[in-house]
Image 1 (cartoon, rainbow, N blue to C red):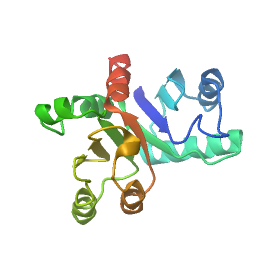
Image 2: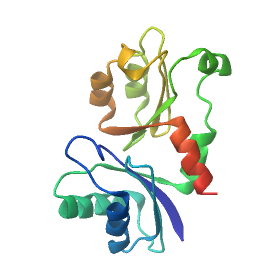
Image 3: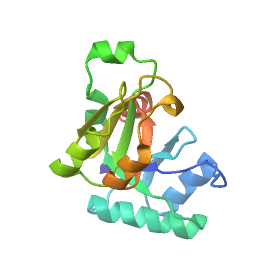
Image 4: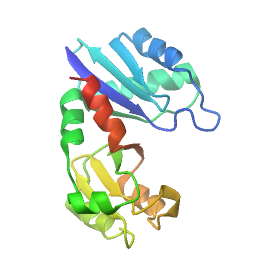
Length: 179
């Protein structure tokens, strides 16, 4: 049995409201098992016995949610092993993290960026904000609050494609639930 976490972009923002119990039910009706939601921001933990390529599974979940909810929901799928590895990442020096007044952010991407794209993204780092790219994740340590940052998130999204962001604290808490 494979264990996954689906990170859904844009859930419970604006007019896209859904209760966790309804979201859980939708995943169960897709034939997924051991479904649990974490917080109200579109984090769904589940298992599947089907041998399905990850991209196909993510596409199936996106299509099912689109049909059930009536709007597009980008899905970023990670295996339990990947979540634990992300939670263990220390992309920045401990001193920088301690000095920052912001929370470490993890942007989950659809695919791993090329070396050229990675270089362009890292060049966009704002003065006191730090960026790192590892695999299919962009790590961002803002010097303060997210709204205070000079980081051009639209330019980054243009280079990397659609993403969804969670704090490292949320990723770590999800990793604990997978243990």
